[in-house]
Length: 471
Ligand code: FAD
Ligand code: SF4
Image (tube, rainbow, N blue to C red; front, side, top):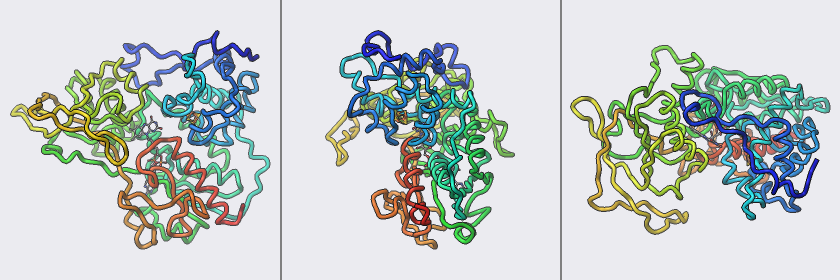
């Protein structure tokens, strides 16, 4: 039980990290789960701040100090119940959130240099352990309605929306073009951050709650939007952001230059034995690889290439380390696993050598004046060009949302960056310009974070419950 000076006596403990030499040859999560005593000790480090900043910085506003206290007191099932009141995928957020920028970054203990409570690891522990011990979401009080909603997309936004709907007696049917649920949780984020079995367990739990999945089904191809609008009381779209952003330099279409997401998806599907007929496994074994970009996707490409036994992996990013968009934790992990970083380098072209290998032209940059968003632009240093010889270049410059072919006919509007217009702050949260259609996640925000997609899926469900007259 709690000791007010626990934060001084026990260090921060996010779970033991597997040694780099051992982890860089396997696609397995690199942090060991906390056991009961460690989770309890960690939870007891929480100061129980009156105005908990961690809660405010957490995009779903988890009741963090409250569930930490329940863990400290050994009341695991109550902690799991409370954790699910604000988050539909707590075991997943506990694994993949950039906690250093969110909840843990705001922990008061950082100020004294004591190290934040390992909130993410305790969140993961609560749900993983509760599931193992037989806890299931309590659906006993749910009063069923006659309403049903079609959810397009089984990513975090769609799953979170379905979770809130089913808990309010509305029948969700979740459609996805892929063969598994999860969206980028399954097909983007590699197993060293999130093992696929975690998603499998979540699927069983959600099916047990009454959520129906209709997979291998693309809306607009296998089923039309008109069918959904006719057969369901409302539609939620959580279709993500998949438009590849090109660099706009010469040589981007050369053989050996590839887009990040198809590379990662190919690796996942190969491991699941679901590579479509005619598609070969892309392996970086023995190759010299350069990854362009500084976000989470770039880090995942770096570390996937390392695990595929690449001869060398270099990551080039146009700003400095302090200004990169990816999680600091993941950059450190990549460095430990042998990725070499070239900061302040911008690609200006790729050439093909006579032996088929590639020459990547980079220039050095320095940070110039801040732009309208306050970010300093990367400015080219004259005469700084260098060429890096390599076999593959993986381009990870991010993704944009875009309108589906059927948006216009259905009166669904997007903004100048292809993001579906469905604001939170309006009479019915996340309603689109077609009153029967709601949207959330990357499709509305542009490429972002899992936890923000979860929040928007939940908020959109609330908007839909009002629209359906259930609330
Ligand atoms: P998605 O996860 O993209 O799901 C959309 C789903 O809709 C997909 O399953 C798709 O198949 C389906 N779909 C689309 N159109 C149709 C259609 N017409 N019919 C049927 N189904 C359709 N975030 C983090 O917080 N932490 C990380 O560590 C992290 N790492 C990332 C690594 C990579 C490589 C990438 C690409 C992203 C990463 N992200 C990370 C971002 C995060 O994965 C996304 O923000 C999040 O998955 C968005 O959720 P979503 O539900 O909006 O969309
Ligand atoms: Fe932290 Fe993410 Fe969990 Fe919120 S959901 S408490 S930000 S790990």
